[in-house]
Image (cartoon, rainbow, N blue to C red; front, side):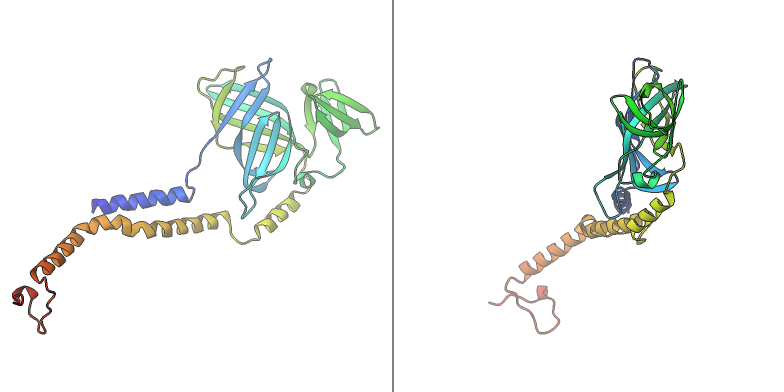
Length: 286
């Protein structure tokens, strides 16, 4: 009885593993700059929603000065980069063993750019000394090339930017335990989720939801896919049951084998009586 219970427990554990029942936290590294307040983040974090839109198997990847939003479309296996752009600033602080990371990214590349921003966008750039209205031309080498409404071009250092209001501008926040971490020094922590939100109205969020719904074909939800995967895993485990149960019946099979061997020794000539007489009672022929 105990052996059968153990086998059932093993089968249940295998089912959970095969159905993806365990979640893992993401490892995030923060490296401060000279000031100790700003810095860079590296790591990958699961992303469930973006601007109220459910992201299929979404993930945010921090690669130093670059942020990427990736997804895995339904019935696909490879990740696609749908939004990406430079991280303009990242600040971190440590309070009572908790790490708080806040930052700003400008997502200007990827397949979803047309859904979050119109082709011609009006943006507001706030610096320490002024407020400019126009459009970001490009961001490179630590500076923003900005074209104002009157056509005037300006080179604004990224470090001088206090805020940017644009459909392409997204703020992100992370909070996670960081025991032993010290403000102004590099640290590592485990993060389960990230809060990322647009600083302005998302241009075509409804259209993006419709497109994602079309890609999924409306066939099966994630929960249904998990249920199907669990059922398939259970069937696979069921095919292993004979091999698992065999040791439980080995004694009985051993007794049957000994009985057959005894019958062969008792009647070596294979004589089968015509009437129901036990073979052990029939003497061998002379």
